[in-house]
Amino acid sequence: MAILLDPDKLSIAQISKTIAQINKNNIDYIFVGGSTVAIGITANFIKKIKEITQIPVVLFPGDFSQLTNNADGLLFLSLLSGRNPEYLIEQQLKSVPFLRKSALEIISTGYILIDGGVETAVQRVSNTAPIPISNIDEIVETAIAGEYMGKQLIYLEAGSGAKIPVNESITKKVSANSTIPIIVGGGIRTKKQLENAYNSGADLVVIGTAFEENNEILNILL
Ligand code: 1GP
Image 1: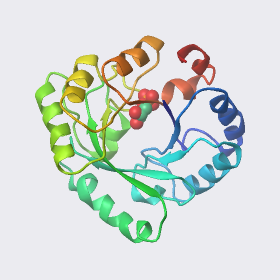
Image 2: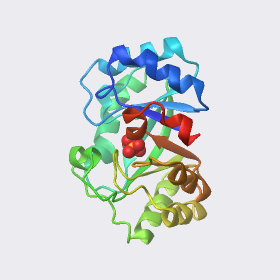
Image 3: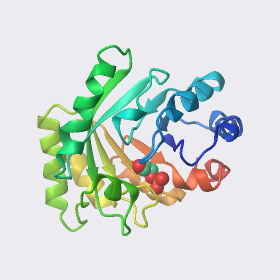
């Protein structure tokens, strides 16, 4: 399981307490990123996290300005569900001068935004529409195309704070049709939703908002 921390929503002063909660639980990764983080904030934010945890920190950036060598790895995202070249190739190109000189582990990730019942930040910022949940074949074929393109991971995203998480039939069908690991995130708040995601084929589940709102939730979820 991964916990997503958004430097826009969590102050540096709150990091110690938050990481203490994460350290106490069985968390595999800390993802750091947000749709609209100001320049320079992410580097300090991660430096502080790394001082107090051994859990790997993976960048999940909204744009190339959030890149920093203070993390261990990077989800090198391509928004495959969208048709906005900025998030298909342009941001990736802008990141090359930094990444060429970086030791960050770069993990090529096909990012697929699926309707979560509410307009989410990724939809607004990327100016792309999510794939409707009824278009299950399009979702599956997008994931397969991502695998053919050489992506190492598929991220099924309902969007931060989604009302409806990615449903089991979608995860099941994508999982049955891919050989690469699947991340599921967006709107997961309950133990049942978490278990459903794993039981339907998610290799990693990401929780952001529910943990942000209540750090104690891990005691219930895990
Ligand atoms: C968002 O998938 C992540 O990009 C996590 O979503 O904040 O809704 O948990 P939540």
